[in-house]
Length: 182
Image (cartoon, rainbow, N blue to C red; front, side, top):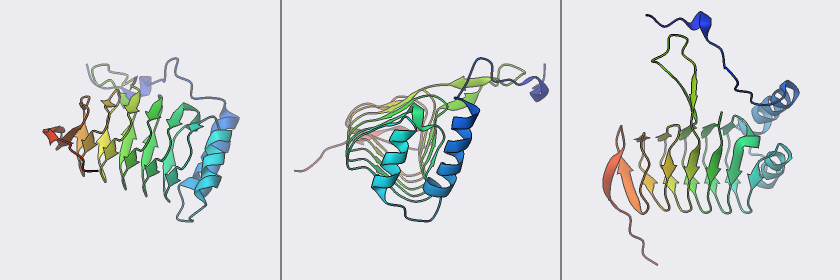
């Protein structure tokens, strides 16, 4: 049997009301996914208005894309770098003091290639406290990046990452433990 995209449907997946999605799409385009450096506090307020759970002291740079803020939790003192894409068809939970560097992608959705209609296959993403996702790195659906783990530049997390560990490559593999000086 071959892939037949004419049979694709989203099944019981529903992101939200069409009005809510369209309103968010416009705000996302003109406030978040733009080169205009809107104030961080303004972005924080908009995220909360659309249902995100957002802590204090967050930094959201320019050209950031967030699919659905109502499926997003961000802790305190987090940095989201330029051109980050949070493609959250499912929930994304970001702990405190997390850094997501430029061009990184958090992808909660994929397709089941084993089924001819190519249906969605979704998985939550959790970034625990102190995690650093390097520039242009990718976190795949269903992944937990445990406390203070690091995913290096252009690496792809296809499996959970242990606490206080550094991962690199595609697919990302353990490199060494993370140690910190005071």
